[in-house]
Image 1 (cartoon, rainbow, N blue to C red):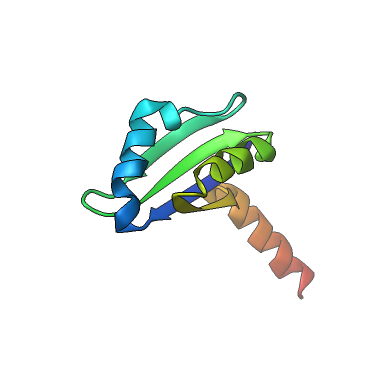
Image 2: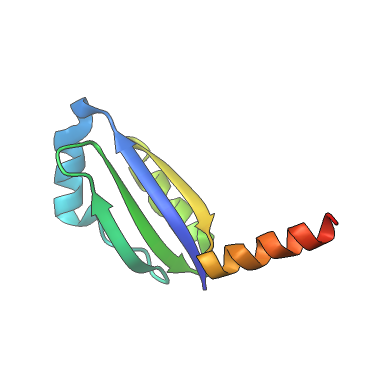
Amino acid sequence: MMKFIVTWTYRPEHRDAVHKRFLEGGGSLPEGVTQIGRWMAAGRNFGVAVYETNDASALARNALNWSDLMDVDVVPALSDHEAGALVAELAAASR
């Protein structure tokens, strides 16, 4: 399964609409997506989540469902172990 970091930011004038949609079930996950963690910045207008899925289009669809109210970024994520192996591979190839 691939991991993804999702961040979102909304403008202050969209706060009430964002909260309403979230409370009405807009924070539910698409099928095939597992949430590792989700955090909202206290008193701020942004948040971050880590999800696991083999269906990146499910996360993209979810981001599009929120794009009228907020900016959402979805990026692939690597663990330290995975990133370390990649860095070692690149270092060896550049010698």
